[in-house]
Length: 141
Image (cartoon, rainbow, N blue to C red; front, side, top):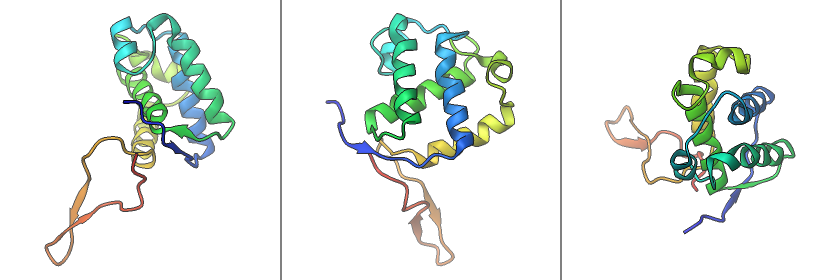
């Protein structure tokens, strides 16, 4: 089942730049297989560059993306940044202009900001010893 709910996400300029760099790398040094592209929600490895560019244009235009689209964006960014096998990996800082340290901070921020599509919830233990949702304002997919 495809999730058609849409979510508007406010992105800071540096987050937009980071997403742009990551999504564009799928048309450069990143080399996904068909199986990986399909697992990430894209139609094929040969179409992934076009599809990530289309997602980027929608993000840049400030459009709301479906939860499924945000999932594809986030997974594509995670893989292209971290993987030296199919992504940019060790070349990331050269192709993107972002250091690994800055990229990890931006990625974690986006992971907290983007809609959730899985059932897990992060909890903290309060002063009273009771569990509480760590970020109740985080949007749910």
